[in-house]
Image 1: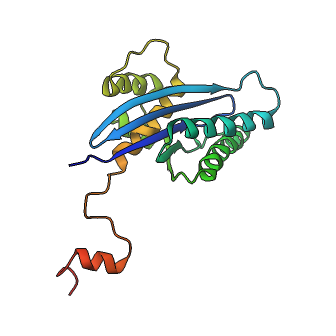
Image 2: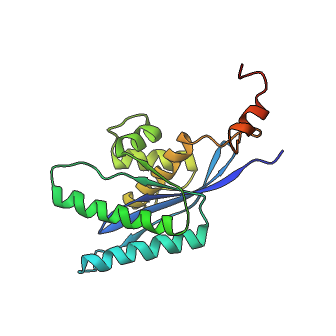
Image 3: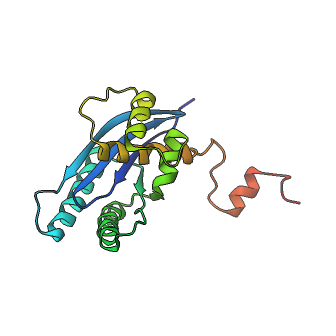
Length: 184
């Protein structure tokens, strides 16, 4: 029996630092492929930063060929300007995925933390620590933006159940054909 594999790219958007993580889902097992950051802190032009985000997400897609993109939703804080900048960064990352026909899944920060740690108010350090344990990698020189991107990917892995064999339907006729007696 072939176990379905899929690659999930997780993004923690930001205009200064964008974190990313890539996992390979092999059946019920997530495997770490890569994690890292795109650092735009030296770029003074905010539009150039957005261009870097777009280019870097395209490069990640071309390198890892993800089946899905999981992205952290903007955090609704009190600083409206920060929220708008974060929304732009997220939008550019989403546009890059859309340009390559990658399905996008968005998760609130609390949902990601809850999926990884069991607590919606967990710290970034707690999330990183648990990711190291689950995905069995050493915490040396970890960037918390990178682990946030990885957490988005793992959250999606936990949320999205791979389709079971025989449970994919091309339409109502196919559903009825695969489920005789269910509709009366």
